[in-house]
Length: 297
Ligand SMILES: *Cc1c(COP(=O)(O)O)cnc(C)c1O
Image (tube, rainbow, N blue to C red; front, side, top):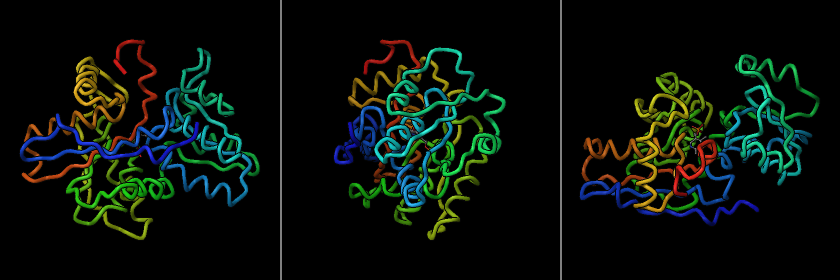
């Protein structure tokens, strides 16, 4: 099944709106049941470069539930370039559904133990073969941000005062800042605990682009204990959000962002008349690590 950009639309979020603040959400999760969301956008220009340089293999990194890895597997298949994923872990247990899916798209997997996984350059030096094109983990970098910048051009997003997204590597946020109007506020919710270096990491990407506006805000404290941590209260927020809005979320990224927005509205963080556009960045892979029937979608 191919990617369907036409499925992307803007939907209002009634439970996150009140008389002062109007909230809409951009549904990037609808482009594909598996390759949902921002990873597809972030890969676009890397793929173009791989094609123009006649790469014979696309190589990248990720965990067992990586949205990036499965998106790369399908993107490579569509572009006709074989893919290899360097996966964190020993590979001694059954493949996760995410990795099975990646393999079904033709990806070769190479497991790397947790210690060695930390040094990506070392992995590249060890495994590199002539003609291989390496994509940074999570698509981090200027080409990833350029792809993410296109997210705001699918629909008319010019009349929103704030654009809000979840932040992992910050590549998507860098892209949103690059393409938004200067008057639009860009707010990111960091999903990693105390990841204060993220501001620098985002600025570093923006400074490589022609538009050097690094006016954005990254909020901390909405990580629920750290990356991929998901206390019962967060899962219950996801269930309630599904019942009220019929929008699926994932506990790694979008649920944390939505909860943060809910909390910020309660705390009157946004001035009256604000029009928020939330980015539903898709990426439901993390949910596949939960036992069945915990989530209603
Ligand atoms: C990867 C991912 C993010 C984070 O994107 P970055 O560009 O790494 O900050 C946000 N949401 C979802 C659903 C993702 O899969």
